[in-house]
Structures are given as structure tokens and as C-alpha cells.
Length: 155
Ligand SMILES: [Cu+2]
Image (cartoon, rainbow, N blue to C red; front, side, top):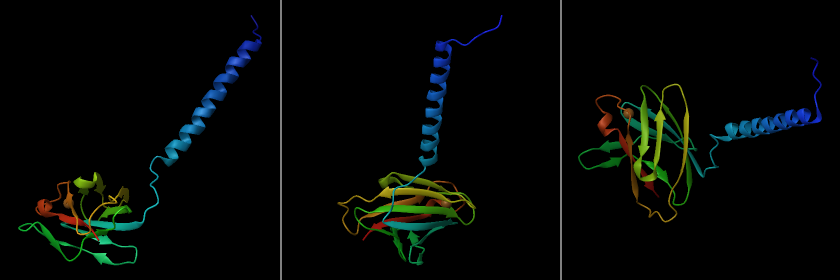
């Protein structure tokens, strides 16, 4: 039996096409932007290595703090930030897998050799200069893993 499309068949077919097209356009836009980060006040490149963190500031300065486990302090610099600022870290590793973790700021991102990972976070506006937030490695990376630490320092 030959079939002829009735008006209602055309209508419900077109309705589905329009609906699915709309969902496809919308979800493409959402997926494209799902990893977008807000504009930051400071961009810092982070190089993880056995067993230290190196921070490269936007002016090209490299800082590699030395962590002292006995006193839980660092010397030779740190990850300097300003109160209320948005900081973006561009993170990679020079050797094995590491993971940057700043518990107090709710930040964690893997540092993987040959790949860049990006994370953005906000420094509290009422953070007092001198405040330090511990940075630790949370991916077991060898004998120095436990002391692969540094500090975010509010300046
Ligand atoms: Cu590590």
C-alpha cells in the first residue's frame, strides 16, 4: 500500500528535526566551552620535577623553592600571589607524573610529561600578606615524593 504523508506526520517529523538540531547546536557550544577558564590576573607556568616545583612568572623569572621538612618552611621563593587575584597555573612535568595539590584553596591538577594542564583559582580578598598555603605533590613520584612541597605565599 502506497503511503502518503499526512500533515501531522510532516509536523511531528519537522518538530523532532528542529528539537534535535537545537540540542545539537546547544551541546556543541557547551562542550566547546566546558574547559574555558576565566581571565586571570597572573599566569604562572609550573614545571614539576623529581622533586621540586618551579614557577615561571609572566616576566620570565623562574623560581624553584627549596622545601625544608624539619621546619616546614621554604627558601628561595614561592608561588607569590596577591589577595583577591585570579591565578591561572599552566602545569606540566619534566620527568614523571606528579600532581599539584593546594588543599586550602581546593586546587588539584595532574602534572604530566609532554602535556599541559590548566587550572584557575581565586585568592581570598581578605588574605593577609604573609599567609602561606601548602602545595604538595599527590602523585607518588619516587623517594622524594613526601617532601615535594612548596608554598603559595600571599604578598
Ligand atoms: Cu611529585
